[in-house]
Amino acid sequence: MATINYNPKDILQKEFRQKMRGYDPADVDSFLDNVIKDYETFTKENQHLQDENERLRAKVDELTKQLSVGGTTAAQPSQPATNVTNMDILKRLSNLERHVFGSQVDSGANASHRL
Image 1 (spheres, rainbow, N blue to C red):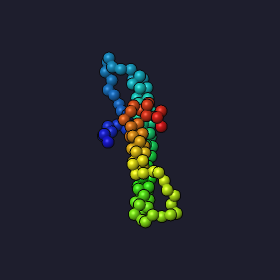
Image 2 (tube, rainbow, N blue to C red):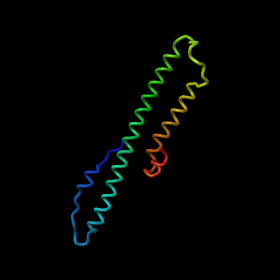
Image 3 (tube, helix red, strand yellow):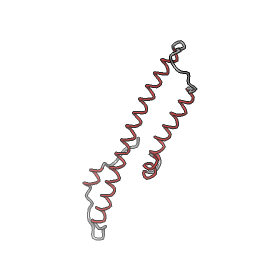
Image 4 (cartoon, rainbow, N blue to C red):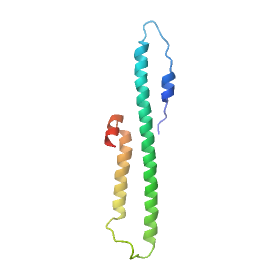
């Protein structure tokens, strides 16, 4: 992951030097307030996606273990026959990862609408 230079607190506490023909401090403060709000939103969304990713990885690990245990034993008549193959599971997993990781690449506005 890329290095993050500023957190919302850093932005809030940033002091700019004033010059004779500088920018209007009220405009700069207003803009930075909006940047802080966006930064906090992106941080929360990123954490949510990381938590969801971890949950999905744990589920995949659990299902993989179940599949490996079920595949090494002799045919068990108590288990119903399914038409789901390993390839189907891998395709579904790939689609889920594309959905989760793809939304991080898109712009923030587009990413929130997909989920």
